[in-house]
Image (cartoon, rainbow, N blue to C red; front, top):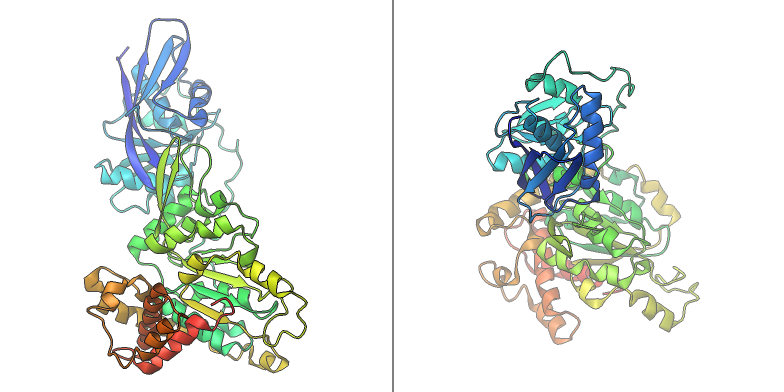
Length: 515
C-alpha cells in the first residue's frame, strides 16, 4: 500500500475553472466506495464507472473501503470529467500507478476502460494552464480542443489501459480494449467557425434595411426590423454575421470555450473565428435564452451568441419576461445566474436583432388597408416588447413590402464581402478613437464620453435637442443616436459626425413602427 493517492481535476463554475485535488484512501473495512466534496449525481455515479473500467483494464480496485475526497470540499462539482482523476488516484493509493505530480486528468470512463470526451475541456484546460499546471491528460477525442490552449502540454489516450502503461502499471496485468469495439469514430461535422454565411446579394431590394444592417455591423448596434411577412427581415438578420469582422484571438477563445461548455455536437477542432448566430424559437423559456438548469446553471442562447448575433424572430410572440431578461446583458455584456448550488457568470456581449410584424395579422404596414386588427390589439401586440427594452435598441427600422420590381435586384446587389470591407475599416477607425478608453465599438461608448471628450458641435445636435423637447426621444435615446452618428461617420470616412449624420441616425432610431 502506498497511502493516499492523488490526482488533479478541474471544476467548472460558469466559464471559471478551479483546480480540484482528488484524494483517494484505502481503508481496512468492508468493501465500499465513498465520494466526498459536494459531488452531483453524475459524479456520484463515477464509483461504478471507475470500478468497471479499472477491472476491465486489468487493474481491479481494492475490495476494501475506498474514500475519495474532492478538495476544496466546499466547491460544487459536477459532471463525468472527474472519472479519470478518481481512477488514477484510487489506483495510485493501491500502489498500481505512479502518476506524475501536477498532471491534470480530464475524461469520462467507459465501462470497458475507454476514455470518452467530456464537454468544457477548453475552459478546463485554460484554468489548468492559468494555475501553473500545463500537463493535461484527456481523451483522444478531446485532444484537438485541448491543444487550442496556448501553453498546454496535452497527453491524449484512448483507454485507461494505455494510460496505465505509461504510469508504471504491470504490463502483464493490463488489458486493452479491442481496437474495433466501438467502430471508427464518426467524422465531426463542420465546425461553427467554418460555416459559410449567407450573402447579402440574395436580398431583393430593401436598400434602407441593408444600409441599416451595415451601420449596425459597423458600430455593434442592436436592431429592430418591423415589417410585413415576406419582406426579408429574417434574410437580413441571417446575413449580419457575414459582414461582421473575424474574432481576434481573445474573443475566439471566449466563444469557443462557451460552445465547448455547451456541448456543441460539432466539436471544437479549431478556434471559432466567425461571429456565432443564435436563433431560438419564440416558445423558448427564460432558462433556454439566458441560461439555467439544475445545479450550477449552464449557458443559454444569449451566451452562445457572445461576440455574435442573437436573433429573435417574431419578437412580440416571446414571453415578456423572457424579453426583459435580456436587459441586463444588453447593458453589461455579462449574465450572472444565481442558483442554490452556486452562481455562474457567462459573457453575453451580443448584437440583438429583433424582427416583428406591424400587427397580429401582419398587414398593418404602410397604409394598412388590408389590416383587420383593432387599435387595441395592435397596442397589446407590440406592448409585449417593453419600452425599457426597446429603448436599448439603437436602430428601429420599418421594412417595406417587397415589390415585383425588387426581384430584379436580387443577385445583382452588393455582396457581403464588399460591405464587410467597409465595416472592417469603420471598426479600425473606432479602435483608434476608443481604444484609449478601453472600448471596442461605438455601441459601447458611454454618454459621459459622447458628451465629454467626444462632444459634437452644438449646431450638429440641434435636431436632437428638438426631439428631446418634444418628448419623442429619451435621454438614453439621445446617447444612442450619437453612437449611431459616429458609426455613420466612420463608414463614410468623416472625422466627426455632422448634421447629416445626426439626421440619418435619428431617422434610423425613430423610423420603426414601435419607436
